[in-house]
Length: 328
Length: 142
Image 1 (cartoon, each protein chain N blue to C red):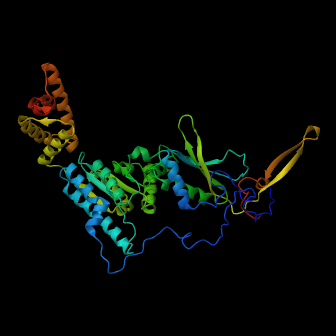
Image 2 (cartoon, one colour):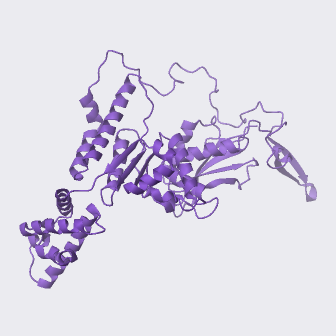
Image 3 (cartoon, rainbow over the protein chains, first blue to last red):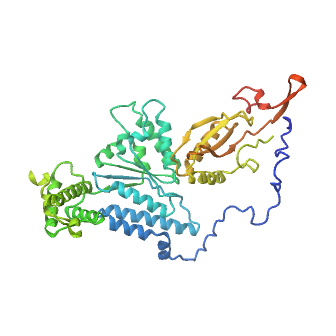
């Protein structure tokens, strides 16, 4: 045991024998982690090989294949992928421009694929080496805003810590700010969010999603938020052809198919459904197909026959015609 | 006297990168990371103050490192440790715990003798830091 004046004995005598800390190290021993030499100014890099190595094309192609329509969104995703790739190449020459700000805002009507694209975006950014994890933490107002004084900050920080290294997806972000109640704790959550978005740009990408008009109000009352979000992506509504294509894609995934007669009925169904209230694009298509599956199952049970494999896969016009949409 | 407590205590103090990779290891095993601090360096002191709640559901060490740095900023002259709790049935204990901050001056310990019945002598160690009231043990003139 040493006395208070014994600061010099920084290591106890019973410590394992370790080499003295100030030992003259070998030439390589104490080097910082290897930074590759910047390429000479006249060098060139193989763009195609770089793209292949990063696996960007794969993701972009998958996005193109799995998501129907959404032309502006796909263009923007491709642009972001190109930017990250070029940034990486610039890094090789020692031309660092700092990590680009990639906070995003997705606006669009319900069922236009905002959440799906957010998941893809996380995977893309991870693949490009911008994010350390391809993890998406999806939250709404309830997860960020507390119920009483002093509850919000720890709650928001906890969520942000969990999302670190990946994407924080805030659905219906405009609920964070309630204009009618100035003592609402949402404002506190927004301030913490802003602070993180600014200070931990390398660790966290925040994606906000919501309906276009309400996000507009949200941003006009929080100008700091709007300016910190570099990418505003608008998700257009789907056209009838795109909805039909989405329906066919969904059926293929579920191992069903439409009979030739059912195809035109399905199209007719969607055309009618589009004009009705509470139409939610792809989500309505999915719900319609789920109900058609129910009727299909019920029809087979009622027929009490001996269905073959094809019968189990094929949806008939009757499965759609029973819908409420046709009765009105 | 340099306190050695927890894992890695005989090594030089860990850098932030080393802490990050240890946190990465802990999170990779599904252990919940928490930050604790104290100004009572006695080795039998189990009751350290908690810096916030244990961080459950963390995926990336950046969030935990942020908490460590906030704690360091608030208590630069305390001992701060990181604990990784393994919540699996049958384990339910700290799987890893190491110091990430220590006061600049560590006064050390003295040995106290207590005379008990029948001329028996009991020994106890007493941290010099405990001679001063809690909260001022490591700040101000020695």
